[in-house]
Image (cartoon, rainbow, N blue to C red):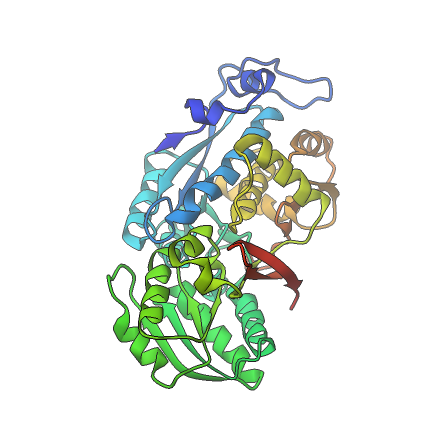
Length: 419
C-alpha cells in the first residue's frame, strides 16, 4: 500500500510551491478567497482499488497515475475544504476475493470517504455489493464496462466514468460486418465483462446479418486453452472475436496460431495494450481491429495529456487513464460542492458538479472551480475522457473508438463512432 505525497515518487514533478501546499505550509487563504492547506489540517482520504497485479496488471500502474495526477492538481489548488487530499492505494489483484478484502481494509482501516475502482467488472460488482453499498461509500469505476452495473440496486453509490459495453458491443458487431465478416466465433473471459460484451456483440452482429458459429467461455489463469479453441474453431469461422485480458489473451492467440488458425481477430478494450503486440508479434497482428471507449479531441483532453506528459512522460496508448483522472476530479469537486466529506453529502453533489448546466471546468482548472463554488456558482466538469454527465444509473455515454494495429505494431485510432 502506498500513500500519496509521503513517497519520493509521488513528490516527483511537483514545483516547490505546489509541494509546500501539499505539506500544508502555504498561507491559509488566497487573494481569490479559495482556502489553502493548513499545517494541522486532517487529510481527506480517497481509496483507489486498482488491478496492479493479475490479469489486468498491464493497465494498473498507468491508470493509477491518472488518479495521482488529479490528486496532485487538487492539492495544488488548495486541497479539499482547505485539507490535503491523500490517496490510499490498494491492489484488487484482478480477483474478486482479494478485491473485497482490499476494499474492506480501505473502508474499515484506512477510513476512506470514497473509492475509485476496480478495473475488472468481475471485481467491481462483488466489491460494490459486499462492501461499498452496505457502507454507503461512493465507488466510481473508471473501467468496469459490464452492463450488469447499470441495474445494480446500489442506493446511488455506484458510478462509472466509462460507458457500458451495451454500447461497445453494438459498435463491435457493426465493425465486424463492415470488415466483411459473415461467420465468426467468440471466445470470452468468463466474468461479467466478458459475458456482457459477448452477448451484446452477438446481438449486434446477428442484427447486421452475421452469424456466430460458436460462443465459448474460458476461465482465467490456465496454461492451455486448446480445448476452448478447438470448440470455437471447429466450423472454420472467418474471424475470431476475443474478449479477454492481456495475460490470457496472448496465450489464446498464440495457441490459435499453433492450431493453424489463419483467420482474422477482432479485439476490444481489454486487449488494447502494447504488450499484446510485443508478446504475439506484429507479423501476426498487423491489420487487427478492436474497439474501446474513446474521447474526442478537445481542449479538456489536450490539457490532460499535456499535464500527464509533464508529470509522468508520454501517455501510454492504453485506455482508462483519463477516466480514472476524471473519477478523482469529480469526487474532489463534489466534496467542495457539498462543503463536506461525509459520504452521503458527497454522493448527492456528484451530479451537481458533473452534469449541466454550469460554468465549464476542464482538467487542472480546480482553483477556478473552487472559487466559483465558494461564490455559490454552478459548475460543470468537462473531463479528460469527455463529458461526464451521469444518468440516473450513474452511467455515462461516450463515443467508441475503432483502433487498428498498424505495420509498426502501434495501436492507432482509426475513427470514433456514436450510438
